[in-house]
Length: 251
Ligand code: 3PY
Image (cartoon, rainbow, N blue to C red; front, side, top):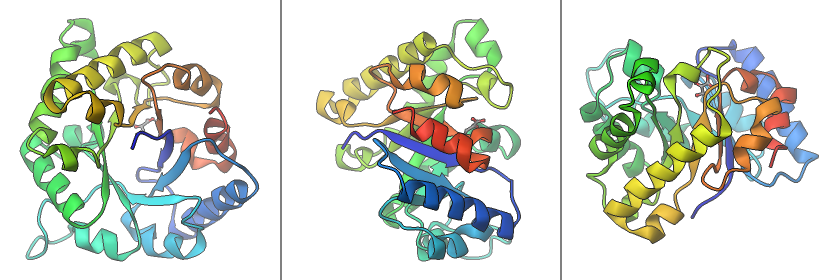
């Protein structure tokens, strides 16, 4: 079912005590608010179980930022989808551009991760987006379409209905540059059409498509006002309860 969602992506930030404090602050702010969107925090693996114990899961969802492409076994240092689920988390970010860029994640490994996430009742927040060169040379629609087709179109319509998408133009991540609300809308409408062409209009209309990339309290309202932008995946601004809540309250 299509929902408005604001999800924080803490990336590799905060020690465990700092992370618990931040989660408690967001939790307290939400207890006193009536948000018009679902709110989720995606946090480092090390923090999941502890944060799960201090938040009200009826008001604040919890997710990981990645999971392994294997269920278990001799994969030193990896954290599997069943392990993530056993902490109490319900979501997992998959295919963030930082993982595609720095850790060589391919559509093939992402398909495995999506399958394992779904098998373990984790909702994937699946990231797609073009780099600056692709924006400038005009191939950005093709790039994003290929990422969706290769990463997700092996799923049945029922399975696809469980996915949250996040469009994050890579040139807007950590750069302070944001896609304009019109650029975001243009891409989100294209993504929805791509889904409709494969799975039909009902599935496409029910898919939540978040915008990510330097989304902050000052630009969230304009972005979220666009008909195909269903919320945001928030980086830096999710690291302080006040700015994160500023974005939540943009709905
Ligand atoms: C950002 O806003 O920088 C992000 O990468 C969110 O995932």
